[in-house]
Length: 303
Image (cartoon, rainbow, N blue to C red; front, top):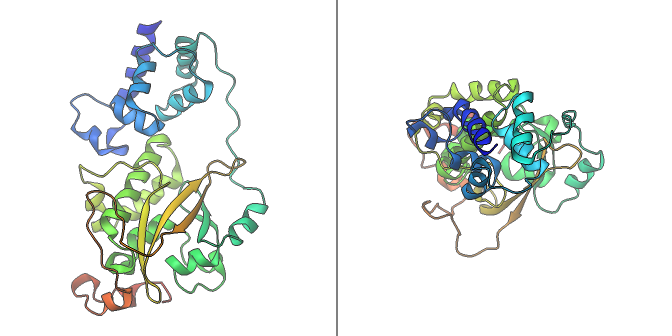
């Protein structure tokens, strides 16, 4: 059984398109993704996943095996074989896809948050956001989320010229590259998702984003929970926050996010990232030249 399990998992890993998952897969001589990449997509350690593939894991949970089947895009027969080889029993029948509609009280919950907060879909479309969130990232939006010209957060972050030219601090390394890494992971998990595929096409039209997407060394990020980022607000100046993310239990394809403000003081940043100016964005903009010179006039942001 151990050999059958190992062969099954290796075969499924070899089928996964490395270019749509993490950059490390591109340099592999073997097709597919490595054990390390698979573990990253599962949210576990490489050693833990290797224990499963070697047949040494005792009593793996249904949730873990279903996650493996999902990440490796197994067919129903492969999923059944995985359960048989790994646990000695057939899996329960697949459940219906999760609902995309959260409980109605989630809307009120988001609006009542003191910190900026929102809920968005797995394809980064805003469902609900409070005034603090919209003011911090979008400016003075009339009509809430319904007043946005485009509700997609990822497109807004990647394509809005004001974001690139100073509104989002350290735009390339702290915002663009990590979000593109999240998009790769999402496409790896659901490669046939039409909304994600369309979203990818819409951002790759931009040559700057295309260059970043084609990089061979995008930092791995599956989700934003715990990440520290910053914006340059025209009135508040440099605003730094930690992202906290979770899923509503009745609609797990949705993501609840709140931005916890970091106390004033020395700017904390992840290892390897450069310091960013703490000047208000307006002070930064008037010195812009080249492609950023007319960013404010081209932006849809009503600042």
